[in-house]
Image (cartoon, rainbow, N blue to C red):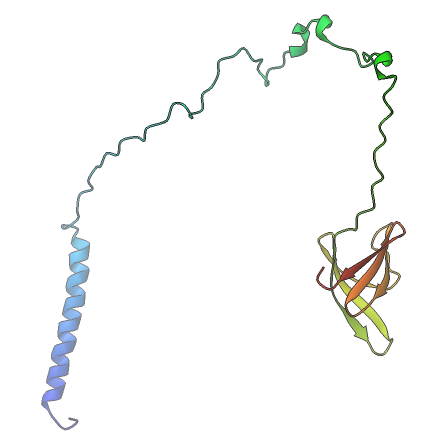
Length: 170
């Protein structure tokens, strides 16, 4: 096939044909004669269920954006004073005391630790209230939270004297 002299004529013919098609497509695309006119279509609006549709009520509410004092219209007879409770009605009722609330642990996630063999010291990688931190034993995270112990699987902290054990990833 290398020595066949007709091969180059066939290849020249193919190149001319391909470039001719490319040029024809470009000229036909730029002429703009075959553009299709857009068609208008009408879609009827969806029916609204009157039972579930929202409506604005035309009540005589005062304008919340006006500078008028809306409390001028309230009569003094309708306003109750703060000490309007009858003490005789509360004679047999014991005073309410809320139950004691146990301290909640802060949002701490223990990610692991780093061990320094030269100083034989462990440093914990934690996330404390959304912030990533690196802490060691006896570090104060804030005024009430202190790191007591760093272990392979857990971190021990105290919050206001209350001990909390936090596992890896928890």
